[in-house]
Image (spheres, helix red, strand yellow):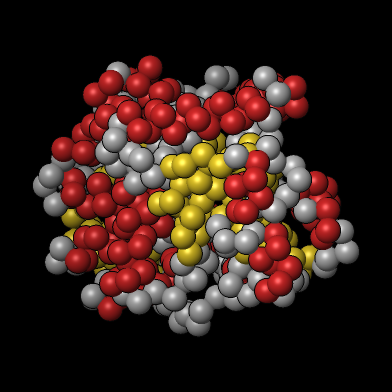
Length: 433
């Protein structure tokens, strides 16, 4: 069967796919089905929305074009990083103090939802605590101090600064001058989290169709209709959670975001001694450059190392070569280590770097554009979507009212525009300004 964006629909060549918990192959959609709520896309946004709704007693059908967690939700760095891509100071400057206060009230929520899901449904996904932001320059340290103080101004005191000595106790690399730890951050096996949430959804009576790429949706009908090659679903409410992989199925959403690919690789198992030498307290790490590195240890003591961006969502020819030089800068002692897995995946970038949520017609909702912060944001937005569908529009309306902006030049120029912008920020990183 042809899958326009997903090859044969099977998972990519990732470490996560190679170490995934056993999962059944769900049936593909065939025939005509009626449901209360249809959710398109079985990544974190769709899974979170569907699970929250089935917990509220709704009849929910989840449809996925490939396998559960096939896209970013099963490929990402596995890091629970609190906050949005756009900082609270940026949000306050653009949208006002009240909106910033509103956003500050929910930036920790996604991590709490993940931990609650793992505990409630006994999801085996190697959940660990702690997220460290790494500084390469004194300017980075000042930026981190400003972020800690900003969050404290909004009542969040979960971050502590790390001087050079304390940083070496968290991330044993000569590259960093210091950093900051978020005690409410963390990391996990992202594909196993998605698979566990799918199991939880089905255990409560939810229905999942896999390997069923959506060909068209009718958002104007009194009851929205979703069509695939072999079947269709008629629903009272439709929720679109395709994010970077929705393609042109819903043209009104296409111009709102741009797919951006990021790459990861996994070393061979390093053994517990070397692994703890690298990251003594088993936290996850990301630096604070515009084009950043991010890394952590897996449960079997591999270093999972990611970074880089390709605007437009294309895969680089040699992922290992692209990431290797950065990994060796962080950990020179890994010069002879074997790389067992390398992969790429897309996230959806919004021009404002703020995720978007809204409604098309009377009964179709959507959420997308997490801009690289989707692990936590998608879980929060899933809850907010479920609240709206259940009749409480308070938080949904606040996000839906935020203005969004198309990329300058439209779809044709959004990639070169963003590349030029990334060159500028990369130059600033190199100059330390």
